[in-house]
Amino acid sequence: MAPIPENQQQALVSRLMKACGGAYTPETRRKYFISGPQWAAAYQGQALFHAPTRPAIGFEEIIRRYADIGIGYWATHDTDVIPTEILGTEGQWEIVSRIRKALSDHGVHCSMVTTETFYHAVWAAGPAAESPGVREYAKLRVRNTVDIGHELGASFAVYWPGSLGYFVQGAIDETSSLRWYADAINAACDRDVDVAARKNRPTLKHCLEAKPFEPQAEILLPTTDAMLAFISSGLLTRPEMVGVNPEYLHELMWGAAPRAALARALLAGKLFHFDINDGYRLKHDVDIGVGLVNPLDWLNVLVLLRSHGYNGPFNLDYKPPRTTSQFGVFEVSFPTAVDRFITLWEMAGEVLSDPIVKEATDALKVGGPKAPTHDAAAVTAANYELLTLHELIAHRLVQILLGLHRGRVFSIPSGT
Ligand code: GLC
Ligand code: MN
Ligand code: MN
View 1 (cartoon, rainbow, N blue to C red):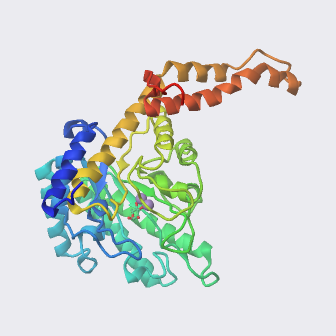
View 2 (cartoon, protein in one colour):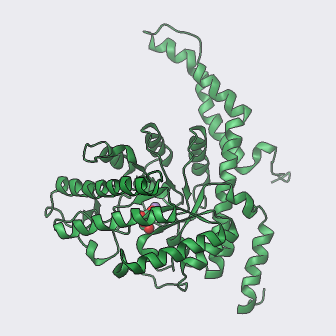
View 3 (cartoon, helix red, strand yellow):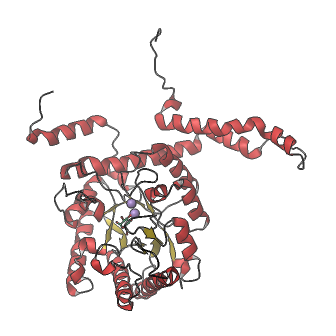
């Protein structure tokens, strides 16, 4: 193959993208509660140790591109769109009205707002620092985000306290930091109740998001389970307004089974919002596009969510790789992430109605014949052969994932 001239590379990418097939129309994509975060499309590929590979891009263009793709919802941090210096001022509201216009021009809805409490130097000791001044500022910021959320028509507010922790131990008392962090969440909920009443809108759903490490070395609330315990610790004044926003990869990062972590949040009635992406166990936050690493696990996750009627947002919290160009972000990265999600979601529906999975699951639940309860050997024998169905079900899930359940086999030449 001859070298490809620069001016023909985009056309090549587009041609191969079309040849891939399997794309849904924007109308179909809009039927799902999929949100595109401002920060995902604006990410310039500048992770730690890396210079940016893509130019800066603003919210107007991102909202327009999301609309073209068929991503019906948009989410943002306060400082993704408003410079820190003008937060809470007149200048902020001018930007917010430009955002409202962009959203309405393109038929996109703002689903979620979140406060950046990790990047600016003011958060060096975290949002629940010892200094009362920092903590008052943190309250101002989360209250302001609630105001912005109502103005943009959002339904969810997310909190990722990634800087609630430390590099060196001993300086802070963790119990105080957690109380102070609760004060900030309480301030946001109080403000929400006031603003919602004034605007005649429902209150927001406040969602805590955990990550086991990064950017602090040790994090005080590292897992979704820790968040659930925090919500019911008695520190929150309005715990009924607060739930969780698990991120798939953040659970994998500490070695969890994401499906089991989600099940625990479902049982607690706290699964409000879900960040979808992919990556590797026990590694850093690589934020790879959903389904590119663990499609089988993803299928399993979606089977669980479908069978429990989860109806919250699926937020595309991933970072297009730094090898993907700006053109590629909207031509390849977002449409394929959305389409893999839709395919896996529909496939999860297929799993739930698959006659083999159904019969095997029902058989496991009904169990073998009744045996004397006190006799362990008899109870074992009564169910013994049925337990092979666990592996059969797992095999069936892989068949459905790979399309083998439709009879696809490979023809192996004889003699090899
Ligand atoms: C940051 C985190 C991301 C989180 C978001 C919301 O961008 O990396 O995981 O969902 O903040 O606050
Ligand atoms: Mn996230
Ligand atoms: Mn992440």
